[in-house]
Amino acid sequence: GNSVTQMEGPVTLSEEAFLTINCTYTATGYPSLFWYVQYPGEGLQLLLKATKADDKGSNKGFEATYRKETTSFHLEKGSVQVSDSAVYFCALPNSGYSTLTFGKGTMLLVSP
Amino acid sequence: GAGVSQSPSNKVTEKGKDVELRCDPISGHTALYWYRQSLGQGLEFLIYFQGNSAPDKSGLPSDRFSAERTGGSVSTLTIQRTQQEDSAVYLCASSSRQGGVADTQYFGPGTRLTVL
Image (cartoon, rainbow over the protein chains, first blue to last red):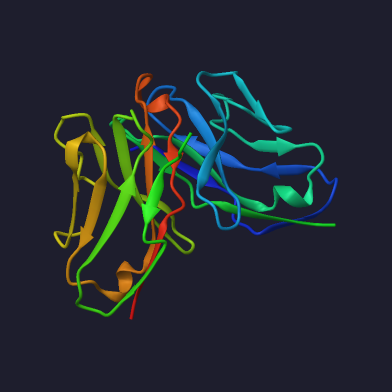
């Protein structure tokens, strides 16, 4: 079935550093890909998504490009802020397209 | 507008007791999902409701788990004879489903269940 693998955390960075969180996927066909974010004490919320190969999703300074050649959807941000500290989840539809399959999450800690 | 709400926010129970967790989805959303979030395990899909269709129960871990959705809106997840391994955060999400599973899922804040 469809699955995602994302890098383990925590990722610890200083403010204004460059961020990359790796995500690779296994899927039948070319499903939409998602990044969700969970801020401390809050529920998950959609950060960005890409619906087809070569698409780039972007939001709040974060970007991710749907690369079918490498089956990857890495999350990047050029300059992180303390407020970006959260857990980030890569996701894609399950094989039955009834719901989403999530990675295990990567915790990002940004210090001033 | 109002988002997805869940109650209670925290629940502590003794092993063997039954618990009920409630989810109020966003008004008008036809799809409702339950997930379980355990430390270091990411999100585990439990059950999915879509309109009046039969729910997809393929993610329920045992027959102690059940869920219902009344009137196409509020949903209740019931765990019978709770075990310590049931301790987790239970998340509910809803979506409009107009665009299929590519639709954004809106999550509630979760219910943290602790089984002693």
